[in-house]
Length: 399
Image (cartoon, rainbow, N blue to C red; front, top):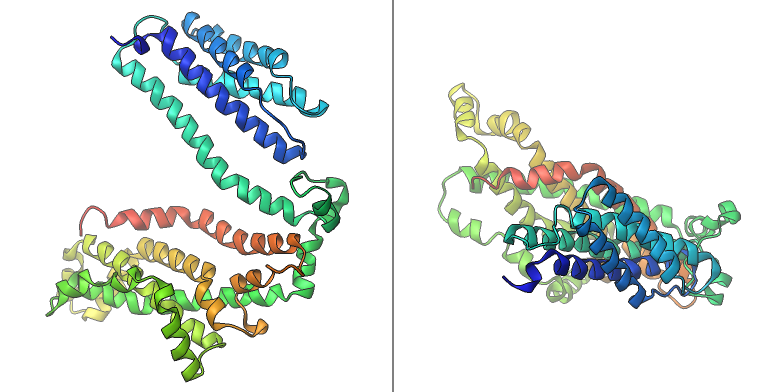
């Protein structure tokens, strides 16, 4: 058996890696929260992880080991990880490092003895470590940019010039923190941009469903010449990069007078969403039991009545997921809006945010605009995520 398959080797190795990751995580978090250059003590964190891990395995993971591991981690952090810049973060950083090292180690090294490990015990400990690391890594990738964006939008121009890397917040300013947001709606017409994006997105969803529902149903249920070829070629237009079509679209819209009009935007957006909606819905329609529709036909219903009274009610989860997906595409679309819209009174929200990217406009206004563009779609997605998940997986068994 490899020497790594012993608890007294596996545990310290995982403990050292975990403590190192936690020390970096705490230091980065405190740097963003306080605006001070918080630096982790790498050697001290490695020693901390090794000691705490050995305590865990040699106490045989009894209940006392959990408390002992956490307390020991905090104490070692207070003693050995105190070399953090600034008086305030010293105590807080040490305590946080100890807590996020000691407590997770009790879970990672659960039921791991100091003696030889079975293959199952070894792999389970490694998987638990990688799972925890994955949660932290991908959470940081998502949260840190959003945190920087929000904190920057709450800054004043003077604060940004003094320290551009200070992402702390001064709650004493009260409502003045949101000055950038007030100015966007008062001076930059962001209320109109929000309404335009909402209207365009809703119309795009309606047009997409109007074309994709009958098209997907025809591909899934009806028999006609070229059905297989049509089914396979649905996504071809979606696979063509929009940047390739940008110049022909610009020329065609300029010649027909559709450029710089909301009607032109509503006309072109469904072109990018109908193929993917067709692809998503046809898989769901194929998964629906055909006997239900056949029973409706035998009862004297027409094909359109069967679709309206039977198929569509059964397809609500899929239609909800497709609608949400199409709405997000239309809400976040930038290239076509940037290319076709020049009149500020007709800008969509993404086009309006791009307008803020100028040396003449304070940086906090750009970040505030990005927050305004992100929050509605984030709230919508979190609120309807269960419908999207259900709709995307409903047609995966058959079809």
